[in-house]
Image (cartoon, rainbow, N blue to C red):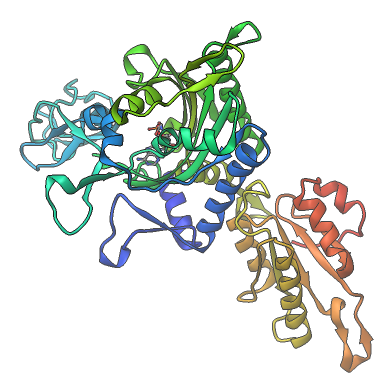
Length: 495
Ligand code: GAP
């Protein structure tokens, strides 16, 4: 599996992800998405939105403001309980999450050795003296303070006066936007239970120890669905909330696999009772085997009626649903699949990364699913000095781009290099225009009007009439296998 440093370096070099404010030394907890990263991220958002909102009959979209009334956070429990235990080093003053201390390597001055400064892997004891870490893992000298609870919401002030009346928070989750709009959506859209409200947007958390690239940042994006169910209903003989919880766990696991994440790198983790969030009856995480080990990609919680009840209590409004059949008002239960856009980007990058040996040369290839790939097609000239070839390339680029496929032109290297560059950013198909395509007027030769399409994964090449390009790509990018499309055209030898 690719390690994090290799991924970070590829992402920077090839325009996926840059350190935020790098020219000022960078901001450890924030990252900027470059020209390819922004396409990748947008594809992930769009696929989620299409599959969760557009293709389903029972889910509606919403986009709430990041800034919400401060009482939202009182009702949701975030003001009181959205905390992590934090410890400080008395020597170097570094701050750590108490529950993360043993997940990082630690510095140890071993009393049993002369040359005694060692870095010991996370969670392990010193093999010379047998000691476990008790001091600061970074400086190796300082005692740590007792854990204190630290609220992770990012505080800000609205308006010109920075007093307590003006305090508000950047939302730590998008979920509350759906709860406070439950009644609006219900009234406006006249829905019957069960139905969901979905939202994609930024959230902010003042994480004590952000890190591991885009895995844990202070500003990130979430894709959340609040699926409201009637707690009095049963489905297949089971309480509706439990049935729908399992439905969403299965649906979300299948979603990651549909877009190229292998089942071996995904697993479910049931939260133990002591670890459940204050609102949850049951939570199951979908974990991915990242370079840092198995970690949460998405959480799927049964939030019961906690949020709607709390908002009704604090706002004084009635937030309920009228069950026509039973002729009674009730408060719906909520099943919440909550995914991170950035963590999905990281999982897709990790999964796609492959290194191969091609005729004695190293080939780095990102095997993205075509719908995930930031660029779908690259149009490349075999000779950049031939005007007819270059202008035909640009014409094709524009034609394919107009069909809605992100298509780029590149002539900054020889063709073999250009192919490798496209492999390294995961472009599924290249189109090459050569002398045979356009002919040679000086020699009185007419072109054959065909171009080469090259497949990223097999490196196979076919000669396709320009008039057929759109049909071929509609098939390929629509999910047809390369072999099926390739069988329609003559093969071409190549790299
Ligand atoms: N509304 C429920 C909720 O927010 P969560 O498990 O805290 O649940 C959901 O967050 C998802 O958001 C996580 O599974 C993860 O993908 C993403 N996420 C949470 N904190 C993050 C952070 N600091 N950086 C990047 N992604 C984060």
